Image (tube, rainbow, N blue to C red; front, side, top):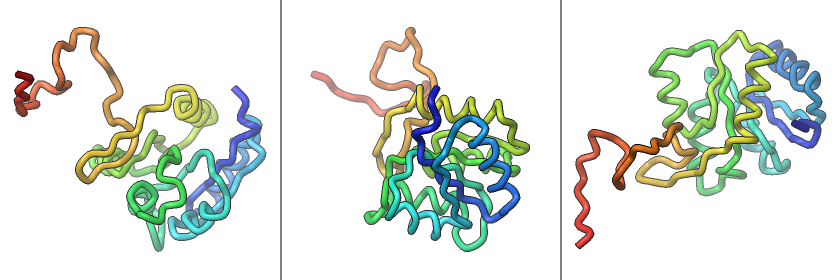
Length: 167
């Protein structure tokens, strides 16, 4: 995998975490790394630089990770609603993961971050991108990760109760 052509944006209010991620990214060959301290700064930067991947913290000052991703995905003046987003956080409760998923985060990574886990998530973003879905209030990557060869109908959930008349 060639990471040297990627433009990656790090969004984190912790300077030390940005430095750690920068060093990890440089070690795998990433050369174009941009930084923002919060979601507001990130959105402004993205208006001038075509970013390939966003790596954002969940909890930040002025505009946190969830709100940032919501604006990136749904705002009419979003600079790139299709930008892949990797959320990195120490707050990995089920509720936080669900909030991130529902905001449109592509991948989730818990701290402490290792080089191996970072490379794995970046590789998933690049080599196994999920299609984007727009329905109701959601816009983002398809939240369904698995497909089943046994599936025999239009719905993929057991509790899907909507009936369709094909006649």
